[in-house]
Length: 145
Image 1 (cartoon, rainbow, N blue to C red):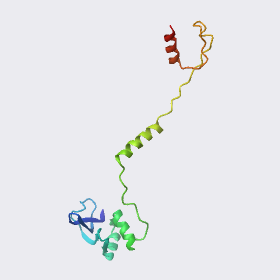
Image 2 (tube, rainbow, N blue to C red):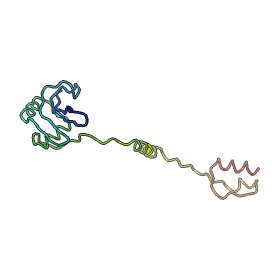
Image 3 (cartoon, helix red, strand yellow):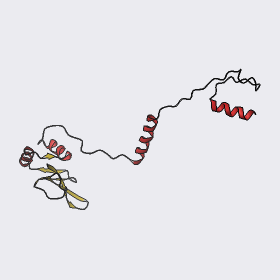
Image 4 (cartoon, rainbow, N blue to C red):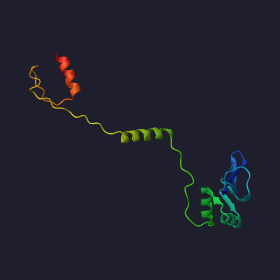
């Protein structure tokens, strides 16, 4: 599949980009078929060969997201802009999301408290009015003996 995309050229810290048509499986800076324009991000200067871009699109070449947005701005392509990139999530955000997911994913465990009748504890001489779980009751009974 043919792609219309940016290919970086220029010196270190002085990036400039060529707008090229190339096979989609090749490296972005690798061999290309034709140069269709250029873009300078420092001066925001853009130059397009409109006729050649329209020709390659008619042949089935698909522009990258960034090039698509450039062509929409220039009026070469009609349509809406597309999302070309998403900001990366910070490392701390991932941990917070996992904690939030665990809190939502874990079912809430509610212990049922069993009521103890006063008749059962008459042998010990004290009546239990509050409801307690079986484990707490066993601990209390052991402590009284």
